[in-house]
Image 1 (cartoon, rainbow, N blue to C red):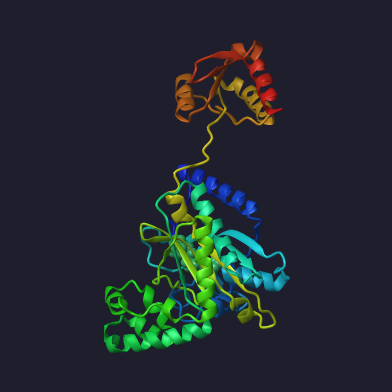
Image 2 (spheres, rainbow, N blue to C red; image 1 turned 135 degrees about the vertical axis):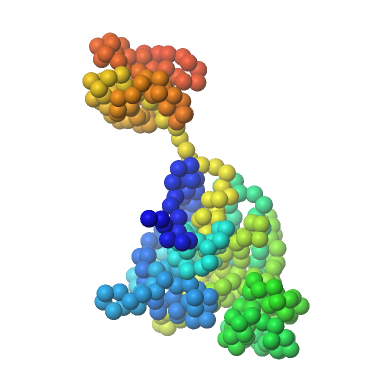
Length: 404
Ligand code: HAM
């Protein structure tokens, strides 16, 4: 049996990178005063239909949706924002208004480099503030994580896609521009032309790209308020020393965005995407009007670029000679683990030579050998890099002092 297409196991050296990245994310979110929020992996399908958008690729083609035994139409989360908004509405959490999550997501896409059917997102959402400082705060948080993970050559792309009113005007301009080349569009873009022409701008099809190459850009169609918001964001980022590129091609694939959208890209691939979504809370609960801004990182993409891991070698490996030494070694290991050391022991019958080889292979820092002699006499511990030996009791005292 193998994993399903587009799914993957995470193990070996990679798991240490995940642990390191998760640690960095949690610490950085704490510094920015974001709290963790965990939502179920499965939600009512309607939640995503109403938020991500009926004519988005996610809803049209990519959702893992099925009818459960209670005859409910349910979906494995394809993204995190809608679920966080649902939870905030359900538990009235908008007061404590900064949340982050790390969670598996599911999209039935064509698997390729950096694109999976089960992947993980680290996302963050900031509710209740409609100014450009909140947008900048999210950009700062995501950028801080990229920097802390030592990832290089990442470009921040920003754009504004306006609000409902100016987007409608822009869609009108875009339809007019495209109307002369309608037959060159791919099948998907044909229907997008009617339902959401903005989506044609990030179509990957070469012909569609040619059609929209000289299309009017949305920044020229923004209303005064959206224009002011976008200009202010650029000014704030410049004053904070954050490098960015204004990229009119960034329109994002989910329908809920308003005003600012942004992506951190590495080698043309988005490792993080986000933006403002001032209408989503109201669309899901019309008794509330709460502005919001957030982002989502693809964890797999982030990890593949992270040069650092949190691999920590064993402090002590205990070799055993003969079955009768194993219980003693286990007790010794347990005692040393109580003072915070990483310790393991040999729990099988095999030659001392192969045990020592194993200790070097796993980069253990120290080695203890327990034979019959050691059961009754002083035990020595050897530092495997300096080759120095000392009495185990002295070593333990030293470790306890270092802990204090
Ligand atoms: P998204 O752009 O659809 O936005 O996804 C965010 C990130 O998830 C992408 O930039 C990418 O790194 C990663 N990603 C997406 N699909 C896949 C895949 N099939 N395999 C691997 N990685 C993938 C959202 O989901 C929004 N909820 C982000 C957001 C939060 N906007 C506001 N708040």
